[in-house]
Amino acid sequence: MIRNDNNRAFSAEQFGTRLRVVLGLLLVIAVALVARAVDLQLLDDGFLEGQGDARFTRVAKLSAIRGAIYDRNGEALAASMPVDTVWASPKEVMKSSDQLPRLAEALNRDPKWLTQVLTSNLERDFVYLVRHMRPSDAAQVSALKIPGVYLLREYQRFYPAGEVTGHLLGFTKKYEDIGQEGLELAYDRWLGAEAGAKRVIQDRYGRTVEDIESIRAPRPGSDLVTSIDLRIQYLAYRELKSAVQLHQAKAGSMIVIDVETGEILAMVNQPSYNPNDRDQVAASRYRNRAATDIFEPGSSIKPFIAAAGIASGRFHASTQIDTSPVRVGVKLIEDHKHLGTVPLTTVLAKSSNVGMAKMALSLSPDSMHDTLTAFGFGQVSGSGFPGESAGLLNDASHWRRIGQATISYGYGLSVTPLQLAHAYATLGSGGVSRPITLRRVDAAVPGQRAIDEHVARELIDMMESVVSQDGTGKSAALAGYRVAGKTGTAWTAASGGYSTDRYKATFGGVVPASKPRLAAIVVIDEPGGQLYYGGDVAAPVFSNVMAGALRLLGVPPDGLDQLPKATLAQASRGSQ
Image 1 (cartoon, one colour):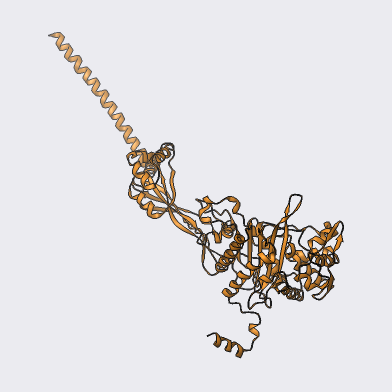
Image 2 (cartoon, one colour; image 1 turned 90 degrees about the horizontal axis):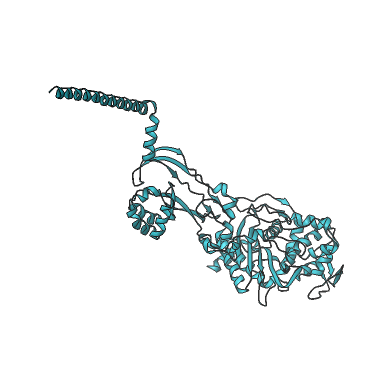
């Protein structure tokens, strides 16, 4: 009995002790919880806010559109089209792994590939699934409402004219608006956009519920209006491509310049490439031959050597020159056909190497060099095109007599098609060298005088004989317009000298000769078959392009503005 009473007393005491311990622990826990709540709510309130933001808010990118590129008449040459990029948070997506087959189907991807991409990037919060999808296709992905799959609005560069403007415009980086070639690279800072950012609340499916704040406003790129006339660009592209194919040539280039402003109206090359489909094009086709490739111009340089002779006061159109073969050092210079003693005009018309060499050797090296430099040879044209070459023109102090003689007919110096076109434009503008530009200008641009106006006028009159029936460039003639130009046919440089069976065929000129408006140069590289002279291969391209360009620009035929008004009215009524 006593023992049972003692047991009950011990149990009651033990229970009381335990109760006090439990109540003490509960009190401590309660105090700790209250203290933690006070700390989180009052002292460290940013923690909960940060955790909430991490779960419900995101920083969303605000894509900005890159500036468009237009031709001088407002036709789009390059534009950015809206596309959607699908990205994912691998951890979130794998929580709904049963949805992967549906997601793969919507992305048009193999389910195994999708699973591998996600499982191999579980430590990352961001992974691209498909870049640059059409918005309509991306909407089908969004409609699946798979947690962890998101859309990002971006822009893809599109070039409406394709390979017609490929070398001129270049392209941007495949998934980024960063210029890589051509005008896209040259004007990247102007065209480039800066993406913005904003903080948003998103639901569990990645859809934006509410905008919270703007972090950085997007800055769109500026549009670029070029000097290019897309109509003339198409003409030049079509005719050059046709000639390269017809003559089985290795390559070709053509440039058309507005004489009055220095604007480049067309610049094309063959072979070309389509910047919309760069995966199918070899990188070797990317370079713009018209601005970067140098070559020895052959007889197309002769008008500028003649300019030095006329400027010296010792030569004129009618000056008689003996074209009998001449030996300079160990080299015998002779023509294919002996012309005898002929005026300088005939030397140009028949493209006599002997006549040009004799005139050049009678001039001082410095005067020749100064004239060529004034026309822009040996220096970049200033167009700003990436990779433009300055060509090669050695200082006159390094010239020997044989070098001075060969330069007179286009060997011993190197030029680009752009330099040569610029030089012919300088002739056409009355001897004024205007800056070359790829941006549209709205008025005549002042320039620097390269040669006296009377020298330029006399040269143009002489160059008309080249396009006459007795000249080497008769295929460049135009109905209703006077043409002044010069052919060129040069051997291609090879290891240890020149290849005598590979040629560069060129033709350069200005139209209309009475008051030049356009200057152009055509270069055909290594034409095959029986025809390889500049007058046979390059001159017809010049004629066809200029005929269309003059019509498109509304340039009246030579002398039409000098006819009596009554005659013009009668002609107008007759045409009706």
